[in-house]
Image 1: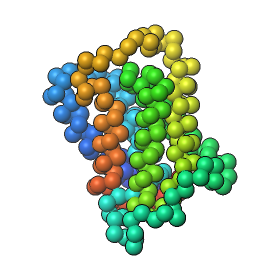
Image 2: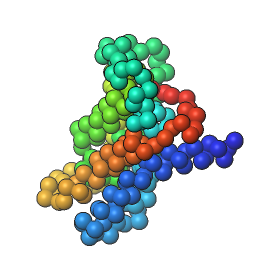
Image 3: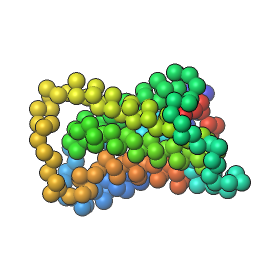
Image 4: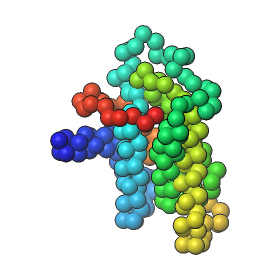
Length: 212
């Protein structure tokens, strides 16, 4: 049973990283820069975290298109704030995105401003919520707001723990650097999401308990 769970998660991780690896190959030839081992390891910690998010939230995939009579169902879109039942759901959604808010500024200087991290958290959560519509799931404004709050809290935790270590945080980011370098984290978010949505085949394994 334990081996089955491991294979299940490795399966998800594979489709999370497959396009990211292609991006890394292109990244290397585009920038001609050697990637430090430390940065490389942190990136794969980040991608492992993303795979866990995808496993927990179970976004819809192209395999879900056509399974239901209508693609978008208005009754499954909740735009009323704080209409969800139970505080547990709010807490779990906050906890789910705290690592995102912590890892982004830890790995990439471009996210050492709360606004940048908050935008990334909001955009990533929105993509997940919209993807869930494909799988006949409810898209909830509360999930979106709590995920974003979780990213902000994760960022604040980063500031508390690492402000003294990263003394150069307040320096401006070089806007003349390659767009590939500047938006490396965004490329990973997009590539991992596309991999899960386009080529991940969830039917091979039972879906786990879903938080969102």
